Amino acid sequence: MRPGFNESDGLDVLKSLTFVTVGVSGDDLLHRICHHLHKKLDARAIIIAELSESEDEHPKARSAALACDSAQDAPFEFSLAGTLTALAISEGATQLKTARELEETCPTDPLADNFQFETAIASPVFHPDGEPAGVLIVLLDCLPSACDVIVSVADITAERIGAELQRNSYQAAALLSERRFRNFAEAASDWFWEMDEQLRFSYFSERFTEITGVPKLALLGKTRQETGIPNVDEAAWEGHLAALAAHEPFKNFVHPRTLQDGSQVWLSISGQPVFDEAGKFLGYRGIGEDITGLKQQEKALVDAIAEAERANTLKSEFLANMSHEIRTPMNGVMGMAELLAKTDLNDKQRSFADIIVKSGSALLKIINDILDFSKIDAGQLVLEQQPFNLAEVIEDAAALISSTAAEKGLELSVRIDPALPERFLGDAGRIRQIVTNLVANAVKFTDEGDVYVEVVAQSDPGPEGGEQQLLFRIRDSGIGIPADKFDEIFGMFSQADGSVTRKHGGTGLGLAISASLVELMGGKISVE
Image 1 (cartoon, rainbow, N blue to C red):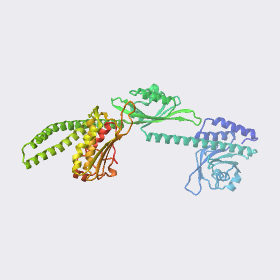
Image 2: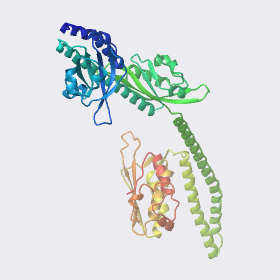
Image 3: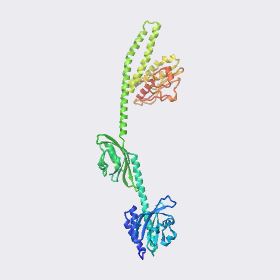
Image 4: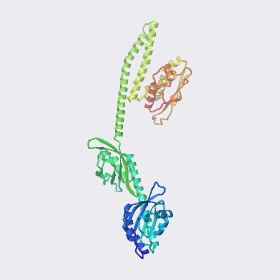
């Protein structure tokens, strides 16, 4: 230590220390501090020691950086028990001891064994959270007259080391956070990508080329306009570029890409803009996924639906053709049976002929229902638009069922709102079919009481006579329908109660056909 060391010299040491450590970090910074102080303070040794974990009762310290005159230039480790280092840390302040004082207060301190010195100064170094991190030790050949200046230099240098520890911890935390983010992003997708503030690609993870067949270097440093995307829809492309230009997030931008072997992959890209705390745009971060498997599944599903629809159409056409072909000879059987019944027959023969006619009528109704159902299912049923008398149509339908109602002792009554027009334009045959089906059902499932048919206006056609909605209400005093079956009875081949159906007969097509015809006429059907 040169004589006359003063405050000006101390400032010079700190200024030059700042100069030689500018832009330096990590272990290199610690070594530069040691060598600079060793030279400027003319010190016997400068040690920067770090605390480390120990299995012993007392923690340990190791020399992270060292500059000295002696042969002791390798890192060394020592226990903190009974050392100047421990004293500085426990007091939380710089300690100055002569060799004699140190030997008296800290007889086991390894400094005395490893170095020859007259004065030892130890300044504690702390982590950002206030926990002790280590100590800066200055060993001098003399007892300086300006002890306070040397202590100040040691204090400020220790703070500089603590600041570096803080910066390193922040940098390490940022690097760790960045690594975790990228690992998570790449684990959650097939690849990860980034753009800079100029919207130029700056990063692609390793699997990008493996999946897309495009070398990363072919895209890095280029904008999306410069890279382009083949086979993409023009409107989708313009929307994608607009989102990038506006620094907006985008999700699932899907496009195909053809690989070198001629195969095609489908890619889905999503991106999120990145801004700093001041709101300045920094670029994009995003992920990419190979959705080729999903696209193939979608195509397979579309093909399967198309095949099912084609098979359904063929089935409906088959049913329609077969029903038509069966109905023609069936009409012949019934006609001959009716003619036979009018000939001179005994009672037994006439009974047989009547059974043939009734059975034929029942079979013909089933065939007609299947024919109607198949036409509706195939979308081939066309409604007529002809003038007709509404009252006549309703009365005709009721007349067809009246004999059955009379046989059961039921009262069948019909009411048509007298305010309704006499004539309408529509498909009278299909309206008759709907009403007949509903009234026949009401009579079939009613053993006593009455069946009531009512037709009233549901809407006003207006002064120019436009379309008018009518409400057809068929009410009976029969067995009723459970509430949980309301949604099922209008389905194909569906009955509310199988046991009741077996008793009364029926295919379960009547209500389904009626519901389909009502919908074709722009109406709806329901039950209470």
